[in-house]
Length: 279
Image 1 (cartoon, rainbow, N blue to C red):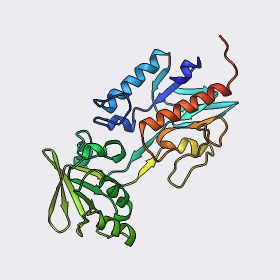
Image 2: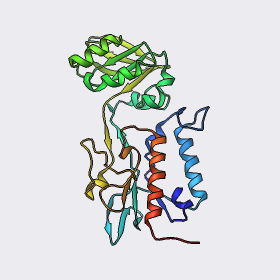
Image 3: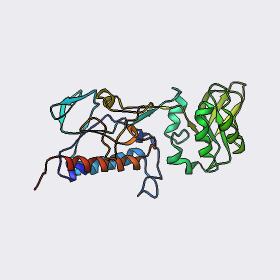
């Protein structure tokens, strides 16, 4: 959208696998006091970009390589050449391949981003799912919103001394039995534990890690951290000349507002770095 308003030609190749599409309703994206669903927000952004002549191709880039002074992106519909490339490829949350958990995402019974919607979980019974050490920080964060936070482990192992004492002081429960299965019952999620007991929750937050979709950048030699997030400078430039990266492929603060800001910065630097396009 910014590039088009700078009177540059921009093409978006959209795999239609946006993490935002899974959001039933967000209340922390500025400008939508009554909330908006992820799909509706994506539709609004798409419509606004098209109004400025942005071409949006429903496809997936399988290869990105240097071509002359720019890049060539390959998808099923052919190859597209561009002077600059911006990776806004995001990430994929790992899950347990449990159909009940996956289906519950659409109704808000399973959530992945407490920064996004922890406020909506205020005073609810919250289950945080993962290994004790990895999930401790998210459990403590959610204690901001509810006194009823339980950390469910998949391996039954306790956490290290420091996070363990913090969890205890915060009143966060950690059942000794491990979580085996989950099923939906009305507006609740039921967890079956290895000792035969059942635990009911209003919402479950899995903490199972994620896969950053940064392969296209890494294949070009872009620097990245051990998680896979691409390293960029203040203008969203990677170390590969002409290659930019924005959003969840860069930041561990997984917010649409952050990605939007990244995009504005990248687009402006791209415009300023290209030959003048006087009217």
